[in-house]
Length: 364
Ligand SMILES: [Zn+2]
Ligand SMILES: [Zn+2]
Image 1 (tube, rainbow, N blue to C red):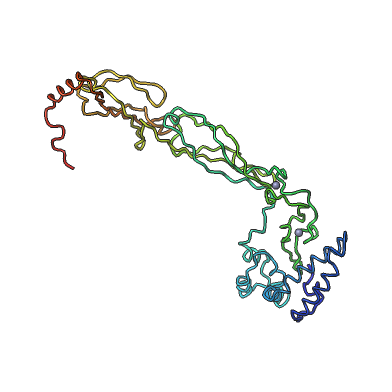
Image 2: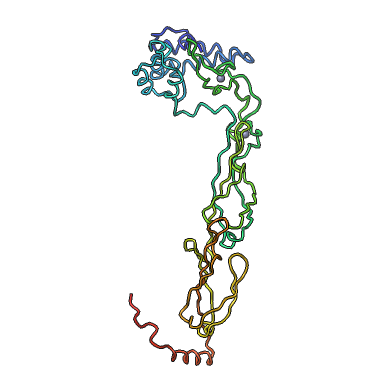
């Protein structure tokens, strides 16, 4: 890269009026409108404009005078550059005193650490996508397959994931990918990021990233015995990779959906079981469905009128690979409803059998 003062043909101490005047002369001379199909003139016009952008601005010119080409990099930080120099670092260019012997990688590693300009060069793995999958308790115990629509980054359809149309040699570095700083030192080109090539035409649809968001319908298999909060990983169903890299993964965290009759209490599962008044008083044999898709027959003990809890071992939620917690049955005696005179008579007759006021001793 040529010295910007030489590009405009002005001395180092030229004032703004002089710089502006020289720029106007050169800009007119190389203007694309007056030099149709002249690639060399177009290149010169770009060079002259870029030089004036810096030298025509007092602050940018001061930075250039102080730090040379390093100040032209995107993300240049004057304060950090001064700090670096005060620690003994040198800047190739003018006024900086030449290379100070500190590794240039170190210099740019620290000066430009925060800019997003330096792109990863090799293939990059796509991003992982995290989402939640809501399943019912029976789904969790029995296993299920669910169809979900997932929005994820996919290769851009407009450019086929390439980011633009065919590439041409970068004008900024003439294809070398490097910006020389003199003295055998160089930086990655700030126009092509070091690739040496730029797109002939950049893809607008994806902004040269080569990726756009797409919706995909996926069938998710939840194996039986998977636990609430557990993650299911679908390899390669995350974001598309860069430059031919592998796609990321889709990570689905299982969440329990509320159930009208089943509740989770830690590892234990609770299920409400309605019983009749007669079953509650006299006891009986009943059959209830279980979350694993089966059913169990069990005995309601006599005297369950106040409700009762029965434990079914190993019929609850998975607690490990082959282990399951308990299912607690909560018996709920249900009185019949209606205004049939016979029902009212029987109900009132039942009241005579309470040994004491059911609300006796009720204190809050
Ligand atoms: Zn370049
Ligand atoms: Zn595109």
